[in-house]
Image 1 (cartoon, rainbow, N blue to C red):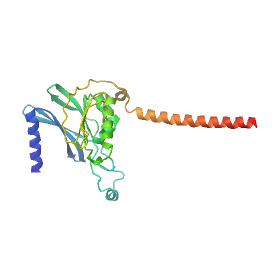
Image 2: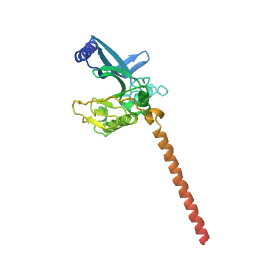
Image 3: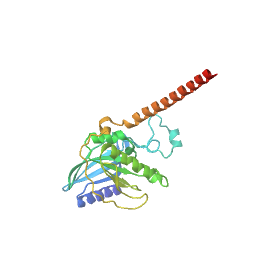
Image 4: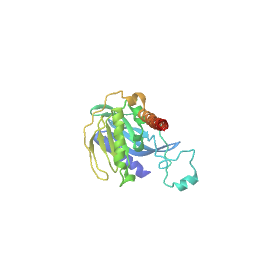
Length: 247
């Protein structure tokens, strides 16, 4: 539309005047459908280069419904459900900054809940995680704070620093150890300015082995429950046997 084209031009001029890369949320479309997306604009002299990322994990039954169960009846029951398509997965952006070339791994909202996603980005050479989110749906609940904590775990696992921008908060700068260096409050208009050092390649257990902690913890929990029950049954049998001998 003419209005959309005018907004595109304003964003390009903004990037060009400041000679600084810009990441922002948007949407995209191709013959397969529509996508919740993020865009990167990088000034290259008089030109503006751009890259895009399609959210890999749309929130189920909110942003999309799996094709296998999608139907008019189900959408009538869930009228808010969108039709966003899932993107192909981890993506690496290349941005030239005043400090040198930088490899960014974009995340959108629910993507930050997936260890395997950021692990793949780290294996592909990411130096910095860039997270965009809209947590306004969860006003009045602990969810925005929990989402921030979940995002911090992705930095802990990969040893990658992270810049998180949420349009309603909580926005934050997270270092490679998962420490929140600066943050905003939910529902508060604010600007964060913080120095971030891109991470050098680090081979953590997560980047080497993938999402191993959850399955290992599940197996250990099952084994512990089984051991406790076996011990309880053994102890009960011994007590019955001792009682019989005493009689």
